[in-house]
Image (tube, rainbow, N blue to C red; front, top):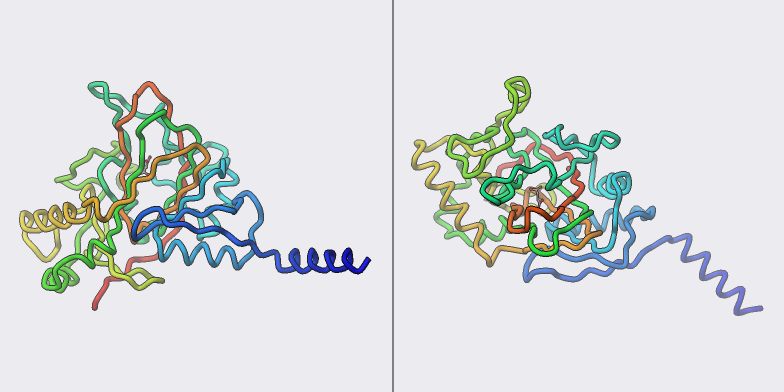
Length: 302
Ligand code: SIN
């Protein structure tokens, strides 16, 4: 009788606290963590939400395996990290869940036997918005038998690794981000005049400061940057390209090999990401995509 009462008391305490112990393990030597022993379909307590937001600010990429989130569940998981924002490409949204986009091979053209994937070449999402999304997340529904990984590079480490003279120079620089740069290495979805007119252009700092971790990071998007405001065109583009080449070195990279059911969220102010078109175009790849609202970017001044 005493024991049963004791167990009941423990159960009551556990449910009152409603605390979870999540498991966190590294996925690369310096950024990104995998989180297990968690079910994002369940209602999680506020302290777990706070812990997950802090992990995203610090580690920049969070991988949650075996979640198998449908669109409504994905929206609920995304809301842990902030307010969901509309997808820029309204062509690729789910009609019943307009805040959820989809990356589907069925929407992609094939040129010379190769799929023309969106997001090939490292970038940070919607850098031409005054308030770019703080985070983007994907939920893997169907993955090809090989290939189709998403790569991430840590642009905080890339900045930290620059010679201090170069850091001192670039913290004062800015770039105009447009829908498609005149020297873009990738082509973007063509937009009607009307849709293009709705898409903003904005001057962003070349080095930003993360609002929570306070760490500096390079802010680069070669597809959208129209040179450097304080430099002539050729010098500006040369600087952008050299910072880009520096940032995409494998020492700054985590490469995510997808499994169906994975939910992955990343902080667009700390990493760039890129998609890969290296899989059989006859195979089906399908992921749901959401974005979390961000704030205006802060320049980093040491
Ligand atoms: C993206 O850039 O959002 C796409 C990433 C991917 O499909 O691997």
